[in-house]
Length: 250
Image 1 (cartoon, rainbow, N blue to C red):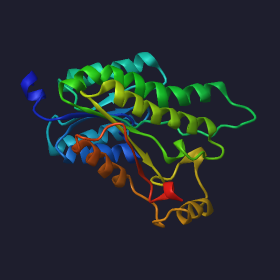
Image 2: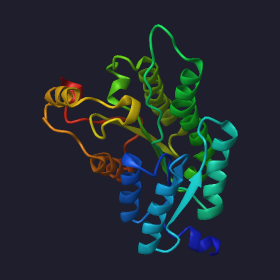
Image 3: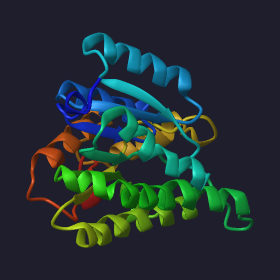
Image 4: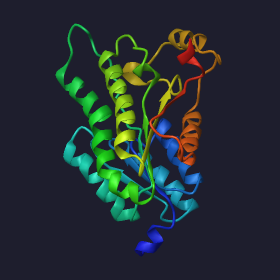
């Protein structure tokens, strides 16, 4: 594949793109004509299956990039590897996130460090590294934050702080990178219920839905559609779009 062929379609890199919200973002971008770099860490099997599915639709339209976002050297390989494959970059989606409980009595240092590295430092480093390639295409960065960057979630103090930092990073880099690259964010509400150690009881889920004006749970496709809207509108930067069924106004 020559360089001209590589540049024919817009290209996106989606971190944490193998499952859940990230996978839906990948699918919707691909459907909109993007070639997609699917980043993953542990979910290599799911990422490869998703890439194979997309490549069956359009050959050479998806690739898998494996990186540990707690390790800076691993993070810094992502953009060069994507550019080797695609030749350019139009959109960076910083979706990968660590969601972990933290006790106010004892804060495990590793959990604290991992939360800030994955949720704050990695998007910052990737954004700066991607800037030259994005600026060549009047590209964009979209960060996935959380409605709890404004309203703290009990038991998740450190996590909420990281998402507040990512919100400010979005606004700060929008100023730093203007006018060549736009930077926005999406703040999901109740979209995909947390799993494993963070799993919520049926009662807790019902309470969240009761506090949501639209009285229902959202879907990953709601986030992906909002993201496409931000990509398509070239006069929006520095904004955080809440996709939360109205919870922000309650």
